[in-house]
Image (cartoon, rainbow, N blue to C red):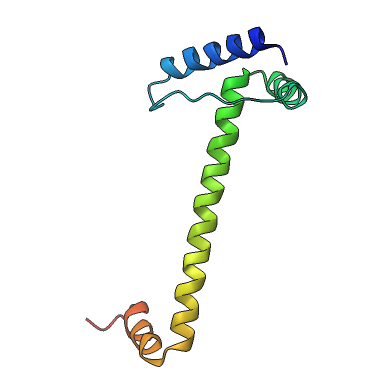
Length: 101
């Protein structure tokens, strides 16, 4: 592993993060040469820098994790409603709007 390149990449990523107003704090990640080469190639194919590409990957992964957690929590609630008569009755009364005002 070329440490000079690693530290240069880290500095470049930190500088990029400092310019981004929506970033709360810079992070440093260590990549092996093969993974780094793959990510650099993918970023280049998209016409963006490595830091931007990694940020997009992390954002997409966080969004998907959040959606997965919501789906799991929804499934727990649905199971509870399905198995609990009182919850089903509440949901039936509360969950369906009526036109009777």
